[in-house]
Length: 62
Length: 347
Image (cartoon, rainbow over all chains, first blue to last red; front, side, top):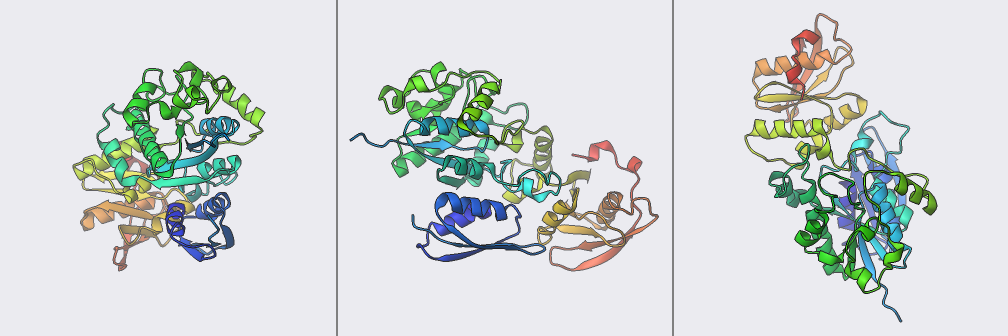
């Protein structure tokens, strides 16, 4: 679900916008960067704590 | 100048959809991927929850396949629309609660609509004649094409030469001679083809990519429907069916008990929605209670959960019971013995 929610939000944003995704799904740390690579967005940072996973990405050109 | 034709490929994350898309891509067609999130998908987060299998890559294979192909992948949330497919499949269920034929029709229909909205020309699937007993048979493939509305815009590159030519073949968008005529359940031709394309790693989920093909999962879903008195579910319900041991000591409630640390962490995320039990005096699993319970039921649930903790042989253990509102209290219970847990409790 984090990928789908990220995808739907990013679709509404313009290139260069920074998006911070915070979720509890550990798979997101792999899946969101993978989604970014195939869709031309840039991962700025990933980090995790005990129960939270964060990915910061920059929206790319369509 | 020849018009660049565009195809959308249904990408499950398995080998067949990877190869089907690749075969068409090799013919100079622009391919984009589409992946439907039903909530029952094996791909997704479940494999990431458990600590077990740390050696395997914890990834979404549909995204991984798209990366291998260098294509965009559009992931579509169909959780709500898909419920009618699960509740009332026109063509019935397979061995479990898997409505495979209706599911395929539904997904191809959605892909066809997506094509129309996005000016794509045709649809690709990784179906192989005779590979699956319900949806991938020679007599059901035309049913999928017709009932989805895609008709001859649906191309199955792996089995195309066993089937009548589709529009993309007849109009020369793709060369039929370069498509395959695979049939049957053998995976050898696909494995050989993967090698030829240079794919050394790929997912081969046993039983397909959907939890509804799993007997134990289907039994838990059937139990959920029986307990609720109707065929209903929300996303959280079907997510939780993938996690933990599910035991129903009484008709009015069941207990979901984590099997390992990863599942305990996952269940903690639901503590605001369910009564939860945590082991205090000894290490043990986190558990959720699903149902309407009284104090006696909670005590029984706590004794049951204690059976799966390190204090299982102790005379008494301390458990913490928390309400969804966050208030908690301590409960001292005797762990149940294996003999006190009837087999029929386990779903």
